[in-house]
Length: 123
Image (cartoon, rainbow, N blue to C red; front, side, top):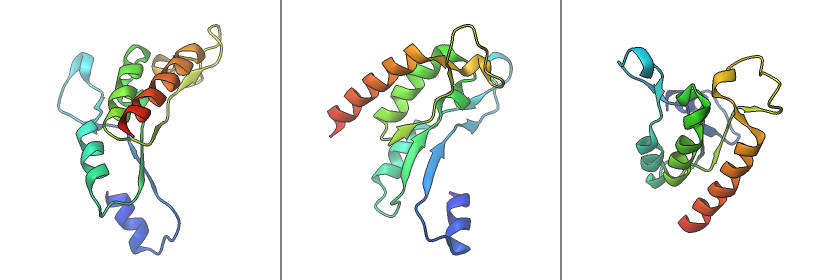
């Protein structure tokens, strides 16, 4: 929200796209990642004074590929307009960064198909 206000205060005239990437929590150990704040997405989508699109970044919040799919669905169900997901194109190729949170292209296809169903149910 601070970034959006900063852009507006400094004369930004174009469209703004907000991205929920997770919030920092005080957990340690295995769950020392960012917590995806789907309630923030749902709240903003109901705010008539917030005219911007929101996307969700489940890869960043998850840090591991096995939960990216479910976090994507949670974000889309909460009202996100889209998602940004890290993908590894070939099973043999390892992404240069964040390889542990990248999903396969087949998994991405499944996620897209199911997200479309979720969005259609919401409309």
